[in-house]
Length: 91
Image (cartoon, rainbow, N blue to C red; front, side, top):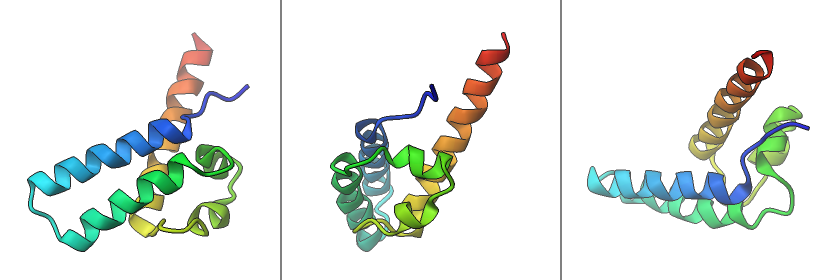
């Protein structure tokens, strides 16, 4: 079975990004986008990381409040996790 992050874990990452963006006094619209995206990911009916794993990026991009920035974060995290999983499985 594939070891993927839960929606809650991904949402926590997005919330941490919000904190960092706020500390940097980033564009308020960008902060708001990440803040709105976190509950969308958390409450999604399917595991969002599986969209990436299954190359169903249209499903990810089709979620309400998920723009290209958040989509890139999710895709990047899943790629990192898959690389770690593959390396761990070899040992």
